[in-house]
Structures are given as structure tokens and as C-alpha cells.
Length: 288
Length: 186
Image (cartoon, each protein chain N blue to C red):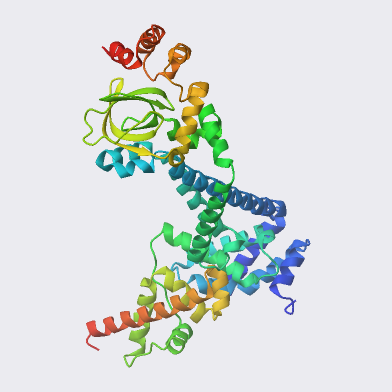
């Protein structure tokens, strides 16, 4: 036994003395610590930011509001849900948790408490960030195609199961809505109880897309401030034309790209508008 | 030399006195070998792992915080190597020598009226089959004579958890032994 011990000792010391094995540089350990600390700080910061964006998205867009519209509302909710944002947030929380276990902070501390502390910290600071304009800046990037806007892409995506916008024109069985994607023709003939809707009111509706039109199953008037991101989207899209009356002048000014339809349809409606025909008739005429 | 603490020796090695590492090997060779025997049965495997442990410890000496206990640090390396080996290969049956058996018999208070040699084999089998989560703190506490604080350093778990795991592990051992006794009609 002693021989074996001696042999092991000689073996290891021989390798050390011959230089076959050497000490790893202290800078390597320093870099490892710094790298770990930086990665942890970044993942926590990003988690805070993403949590703030999730709060922002749920509070200021149409996503959650659809849930009050029954079965169709669930489809619209699922369609407009910010999956990338939530998945990225969950991954980052996991990464932060993993990195904390690798750092000196967690040394001999129960992981459960650390994880709860981490989540509370992220939620608290994510909540505090809602008092800043950070999310609005990222919303602008989403509309302008900036890289940070990728997390809010669902905000600018066209929905097939839901629509939200300002009433531009009201007919017996249709609405023309100003939406972040332009004017949309919305059929309300299937709706059992249509609320008293007036021009300029903000509505959300659920149903299904049928060609150029959106057939509504359920509709609800909402306060503009409850879907303020949609309101800003409309202002972004329409600029000076937002909420304009369909008088002779505005019809002529209205650019065809404000219409969420294909080129042939847009050209048709533009020509029709220029002819000063009523907009309702224009949409119907071009739809044939 | 014997008066120097492990941490002082490490500081001197880092200052350039490589030969002092021989003292570290001398101090921990037997201890770590005994510790690894609680996870592995093959003596060649134990020797190979022991060598890896000493080499890894030397290479990473700058990663050791001299304000902490060196023993916990090197046991941690041995622990990780043992776990890695267990993950790669099948868990071997451990073997207790008489002193170790006496230790667990007295300290863990699991002695029964049955034939002691028969019980020793039972305990060996039970500890071999014990989940690594419980086996680790039990081995460190009863065989390596470490305090809860030191075990908590080696396993990087809170001190309270060490106590809980030892208690649960001890109860499991008792339970297994009772089952064995019932099975054999003792």
C-alpha cells in the first residue's frame, strides 16, 4: 500500500517537475469569474427588460382584451400572443438561475431562496421600468424595423382572428376601421348584438378573415387608453389622415397605401374615392 | 513543515516552491483514497482517479481561495471525479474495513442484535445501494469525520441541508436493515 502511495506521489511530482503539468494562469480564473459575473448581470438585465416588455404588451395592446370575447377571443388571443418574448424571458430566467448556481453568490445558499429572490428582483425592476419610456422606444423600433423591435413583432403583425381599430365609417352591416395596417372592411352582419357604435370610437372584434373582408362574430367598444399601442400604430400608419372625415378633400388626399388590400383593390378604391363616390359604395364596388 | 497549514503550503507553492506539493499529496493521499473507496470498488480505478484529483488540484491552485479551507476544496475535486466516474460506469459495491464499520455502528447508532459480521455485510450492501445524495454526506460525516460546516463546503449545499440529508440517509439505512432482517427472519 505504501509503495503504491509512494508511486502515485512520485508520478504526480515527476509530471510537475518535468513541466508536463503546470499551473493554470491566475488570469484565466480572473477572466472566468469576470465572464461569469458579466453573463449573469446581462441575463438578469435582459430578463428585467423582457419582463417589462411583456407587461407593456399585455397592458397596451389588444392581446388580453380579446379574452373577454368568448371562444373566438381565445383564438385571437393565441394569435396575437408574444411567444418569442415569453420564451426568451423564460430561457433568460433559466440562464440567470443556472449562472447564479455557478457564481460565488450562491455558495452554500439554498437554490430555492435564490431563485425566488431572483424572480422577485426581475419582476420588481421590470415593473419599475414601466414608469420609463423604454418600452415605447422599443415599440417604435418594432414599427420602424429596428433590431430591438423583434420582441414586439406580434404588435405589428396582422391578425386573422381579431381586429382592433378606430371606426372610420359605420354602415348597417359593415364598418370601415382605421387599423395599424390601414383601412379594413369589417362585416358585422353575423353579430347578434351590435353595440351602438359611432365614428371615432375604438373597437375590438373577433371573427375570421374572408378574402379582403373580416367577418365579425363578436365586437366590443373599448377605451383608447386600454389599447394605446394600437392607437399609436394607427397614428403611425395614418399620420395626418387619422380620424379625418370622408369629405371631398380628405378622400382625395387619402393615399391608397392606407388600405389593407391588394394593389388591384387599392387602385380601384383610389379611383373610386377620386370620383367622390361614397366610400361604402367604393368598397362594395371594388369588392365585386 | 508539519506545522504549516495546507493553505500556507498552497501560498508557498504559488510563490514558486513546486516541491511543496509533495507534502499536499502526502497529507491527502490516504484520506482521499479512503473517501473514494466509499464510491468505487476497483482499486485501480481509485488510484487512477486519485492521480487525476492531485493533478487537477495542482493545475487549478490559482482557483483556490486561500482564505477558505483547502481540505474542503480538494475533497470537492475528489467528489466531482467520483461522481463523474459513477456516471460513466456502473456503481461498484463498497467495502468497509473494521474500523469504519465500528464508526458507523457507534456513531450512526444502527447496531442491532444480529450477528455483527452478517450486519457488516448488510451495511456495506445498504450503503453501496444508497442514493449518492445521502451516501455522500454520510460518508463525509461518519468516515471522514467532517463537521457539517466542512461537508457543506465540499458538497456546496447549505449546512441545514447537510443535517437533513444525514438524518434521512441514516433512517434509510435503518429501514433497509430492518427489511433485510425481516426477510431473513432475524
